[in-house]
Image (tube, rainbow, N blue to C red; front, top):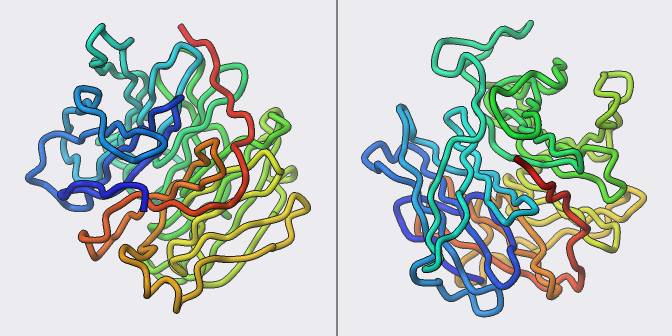
Length: 320
């Protein structure tokens, strides 16, 4: 285990920033919480960094919290509020503290369904990935869509919409940029009935040709639900499997290398993998995994596993 995430809330997005690991906070139904903290931890020890943690004021209904996170070239952090906006930190002050400003919004959020060709509820962005040009891509877990935010922020626009992304409550869960910088990978949790995911899929699509004809299936498996994906410098793709409580490792050619831990090994851990979500490589060979702990808040933590890999270069653009 890397660190526990204080209750209320569970592990959300993870950003490795030099010697600091930033951890966002999810909160499924914690209506009595008025702020969502982003915690700062020492990358090597997991110890909390006093004075670096900052909070985000919730907005109604604001019962979901912060999930995806990213960083720009100026060192500012970006956190996806699942209630339809992206927040950005201001530059750190001399004592290490940061302010927070609104960077982007999803159009029409809170005013009924977004106008897409399929019935759906309000948008719910759950991750963020930048490309080298500074565009941000936001997968939507309730709509069959991926949003794009232009460099500098503002209102997001629909970038890719396709019925294959409709997941009946568990849609597109995560995104990451391929090491070539040209393809966006995204994962889906598909379901045969509302709110009960039964199958997981990972696709890739070129960022300059976001059409259904250019979408390629990379992975598909029953009872998996890949809720977080990240590339290593080895070319391997790591995916957290929310339903199986495992991590999947795909070879650079897309073939499955392994899954861990086994059900038996997981049961022996002090804090088991419990609805694992977003993940990140720390630069020292360790994979960090957020336990979303959907039904067991005592398992709220960031877990770590040694995979002997380092992160593939992430796009951290210089933004206005």
